[in-house]
Image: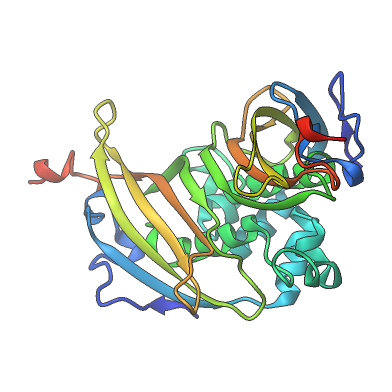
Length: 170
Length: 170
C-alpha cells in the first residue's frame, strides 16, 4: 500500500478532485514501490524481450552489469503511482501525450522507487470551458535519488460541475 | 507471429545489425498485433487502474463510449514490435528517452495494430566512435489508419566491431 510521502497532499480527495485543485508549483510525493527481478522479467517477456531485460546471464556482461527493467515498465510504475494518488478519479478525461521522456538511470531488481509530481502549468480550455489542461513534471526516484524515468505529462481534467471556471465560481 | 509488412526490410538480420544499417529516410512496417479486452484489463489493473481502463461498465458512459487501453500499454505494444523486428539484438546499447509521445486515437478491444518505424536521423558519437545515436519516428497504426501512439525514439547503437565508423571501414 503506497501513501503520500511529502510534507503536503491535495486537500481534495482523489474521488472529488477537479481542474482547479491542481495549482502551478504544487509538488507531491507518493510511494514506495519495490521492484523485483521476477516482475522485470515478466514485463519484458511480454513487451520488451531484449536480452538486457530478459536474460540475467547475458545482462551480467552487458553495459549495465546486470538485468535492468524495460523503460516502459518503469513508465508503468510511475503511472501506477499517478493513478493511485495524483490523477483525479472524477475529473480525468484524457491525456494527449507526454514530452521529454528520459530514462536517466537504469531501474534494477531490488530498487525502491517513489513518485514526485510537480504541477508545471494549468490552462483552462478556451473552446470548452468545462475542462482544462494540467501539465505535470513526473519523476520516479530510486533509493539513491537517481531518476529512472522523468517526463512532462499533459492531462485534460474536468472543471468541478456547476463551475464554469475557477474564477467564475458562485 | 508478426512479420515485415512493408515493401522492404533491413538487409542485415536483427542478430547482425549495427549502427550503419540504420539509414536516414528508411521506413519499415511490422505486424500485426491483435488486442483484446482481457489483456487491456490485465495491464491496467497492474499499472493504470483508472476506471476508463479497468471498468467496462463505467467506460461505456465515459468520453470514449467504452473501455480503452492504458496509453502505457499501447507503448508496450509498439515496443514489442520494435524489439522483435527493428532494434538490433547485437548492437542496441541503451535508450536515453523519447520525445513528443502522442496518443492520437484510443486503442480499443478488437483493434489490430501494426508498427511503422522511420529513421529520422543517425549521428555517430564524437566522444565514443564505437557507437552512434539513431532517431526513429515510431507509429502504431490501427486497422483504420488511426495512430494510437507515436513517439520519437532515441537509441544508442554500436558500430560493427572492427569498424571505427561507417566511412572508416578497412
